[in-house]
Length: 51
Picture 1: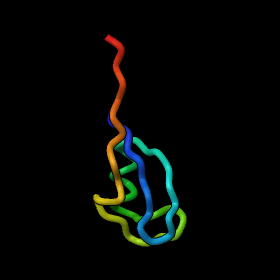
Picture 2 (picture 1 turned 135 degrees about the vertical axis):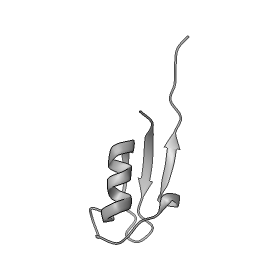
Picture 3 (picture 1 turned 30 degrees about the horizontal axis):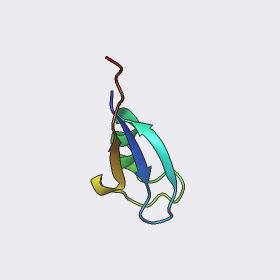
Picture 4 (picture 1 turned 90 degrees about the vertical axis):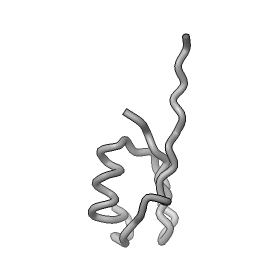
């Protein structure tokens, strides 16, 4: 499952979340300031695979 770097555009809170938490934050807003967040608040973190 992809991971995302979440940065709240309202309060600046920053954390790494998985896809499920990303969807939840989009639905309910920032867990720190409770303001609504949109897709641009999330940046997918590339996964590293050793082949």
